[in-house]
Image 1 (cartoon, rainbow, N blue to C red):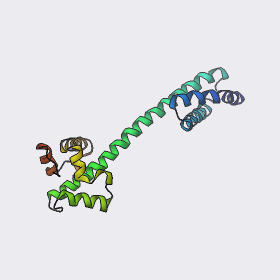
Image 2: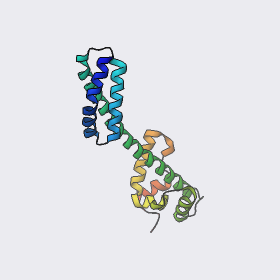
Image 3: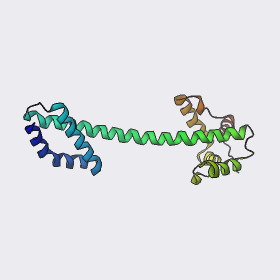
Image 4: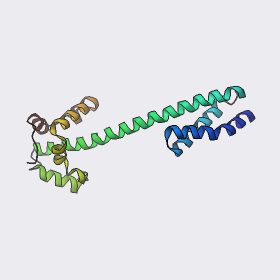
Length: 170
């Protein structure tokens, strides 16, 4: 136990500097080093002092790689989640136009921005389609349909708009 404490006391500053250099974030580096120290203490407290440096380096390396994987996955998941939210709403708005609930795209944009909190900088779901292109929207909806099911099936208005490369606004 004393050997482990002595080792951890000598390695903490170097491990932190190395990890901070790799991840470029002092708070994350501190968390990674502390987690590595805890894992070493919990799982390898009974090992001889000569084995501790190699064990700690391996644990620290794995913890750092895990941090990078989580960052990459988190960024991709958040981007896709945002697309799913927006495109689901865009598809539903187009469906409302298709079934006559809305009389035109302008009404749908106004209602979406003022009523349900569609991002105003996007101008509403129909402006969003015009800006990004119906073809791209339909392609992404089909991709989501394959991955998440029929709730992302593009409505016929969007499919027709994509087929003729049309727009909701002149």
